[in-house]
Length: 182
Length: 274
Image (cartoon, rainbow over all chains, first blue to last red; front, side, top):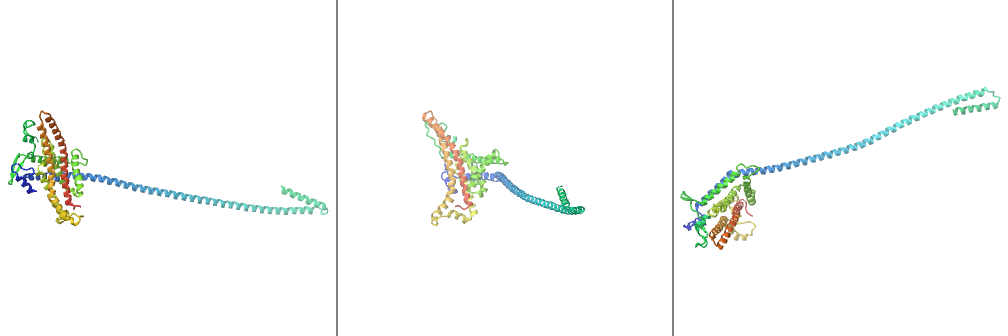
């Protein structure tokens, strides 16, 4: 390329060809590029690269933070839901326990009432039996006394008159009926 | 170009004034030395070309130095514009062609893009009106810099044998095809590639400049008190204006293509192709 260029330049001394590549222009062009490249690469572009990277990091950091927050929210939500489920379970357990408690209490009360009633019935029955026995005893005694009285009366009257004996017996029995009616 | 007009025709050269059309030629790419000096037996000529070249260097370093002097996380003003340029090179060229591993070549390609673009851009800047890259030595210099970067880089990254093997024997091709393919790959990658890299930029800028000069000279030359003169001059002037806009687009495009190709070459050196 180089030789080709100098060849072309050398060919037309008077009016250099437009394809001439004089060495001095080549060197000046090289210097111009090196100044631009050196200046930009060393002083200018590193600064903007750092800034752009920083910006990208910031944006990425922001996205990361948002992601983290989302994750955290999800965790909190899950926890809350777990707690809610737990509370629900607990409530239902309490309800079940209360149900069984109620049944037990009712059963107990019923048993208690039943036994109390039995006691009352038993005591009433005992009292009745006692009264009956008492009544029977009293009646027996009275019957005895009455028999004695009757016997007295029968003995007191002259045993001669059968009709009088019969009347005495009849009045006794009437007396007896009156007493029973009273 | 005003330069060119005066040089080729003179201020009174118009249609019907007995003066032929002073078509601009190669002479509009020749400039007298403003200053000459000799270093180590080599004569250096400081001309308009050299001046515009160094003005571009100063502008690029000045602008980006100012824009990125204290870069803020939230950019404003010049930093915004500068970042746009940086991100264009990083995301639009480097990451696109090389990938993330090419990030350390951003300053290299950044320098090329903006240097080439500003040098091209001089072509439409009033007063300058010379795309410096239409001076063949400049694109040649840049192409040589790219060439002596990617070839040693490829040898360093892939090893001497690996590098040449990867280029001359692309995998996935029937063995017999290598008879045809290997010489083509060798010539196209090592000989034609730097040449086309330089010529593509040079020829575009050269032709564009010549086109602008031709229509500008025509607008000046045709200007005379006649129907054909006025119509022709107006048409030429309109075309010159339109082409100036078109050239501004071509200049940016060629700077992009030059940089993109440099990135592709560096990418091919970093990782084996295919």
